[in-house]
Amino acid sequence: MREDVKTYYGETLQQSSDLQTNACCTGEQPPEYLKPILAAIHDEVHARYYGCGLVLPEHIEGLRILDLGSGAGRDCYALSALVGEQGSVIGVDMTEPQLDVARRHIDYHRGKFGYKIANVTFLQGELEHLDRLDIPDNSLDVIVSNCVINLCTDKAAVLKQAYRLLKPGGEMYFSDVYADRRMPAQLAQDPVLFGECLSGAFYWNDFHNTAKACGFLDPRLVKDAPISIENQALKAKCGDIQFFSATYRLFKLAELEPFCEDYGQAVIYKGSIEHHPHSFTLDKHHHIATGKVFPVCGNTWRMLHDTRFNAHFDFIGNWDKHFGIFDGCGTALPYDTEAATNSGSACC
Image (cartoon, rainbow, N blue to C red; front, side, top):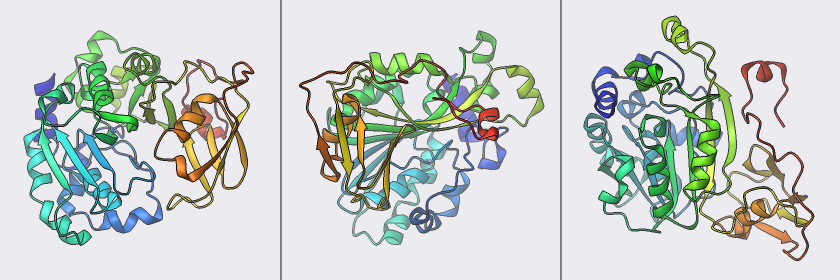
């Protein structure tokens, strides 16, 4: 299957319009501050973009970032503009034709962003074997990925490698494709469905449990959207399986608990993160308005206190008294289905 993926992304697909579903291409509009950055990226890099979401972690100036499955480099170059000349971005991909596109435009983007030296490098490698690359343990601030982990046959190995490379308090922020059930064996072996990012999709609950087993103890869903399959032959193969594009953030914080425990804590966002003066969104259920006392569970408190976000919040409370588990910490399908999206309703 790995060779099929190399062929599909290195030879079969020549541009994003060659895809047969919208699983690997997002229609999400970028924020205003990102538009001039994306406009500066080379047209050839744009044409070979196959992402399923906007991978845009906040507050990353000066950070060291790794992009898993960087492809032709669009996200790497966008992130390179956001981390600035003091930060750096490493892109890893196994597909040589994609890397060729990314590498030949390094100097172009250095000039576009006005840097004296390039802050982007591209490495060839398999995401399950990042230990074969010269990247030290506990050395990365953020790891991103955009619609690639579904193409990996050993997803647990990818998450274990990511956890190893992140600094304590570091974050994995990534978009991918998920399913509402486990994939039947015959679909999992279909090379077109696999290349289209569908048949390799994680069953969402298996993903949550795998992430926890790899050290990411409280996966946080940031946003999600249902995926449509316009190709009728592929749609018929998939039957009633529902697919979703979803963005998660996983923190390397050893003291996180399995559930959302209430210690009577709260935070106040200062409005000081660039491009986010009015509010900060940690995840789908934590949209924190500037200046407002916002009650949080112990895990959310740590995600803000023990990470790069610390200076941008005031913290209320401690760990002296426990009030039980927060309401709504459930196990139902976490994504909004197409019907729910159209009706304006949402899951808990």
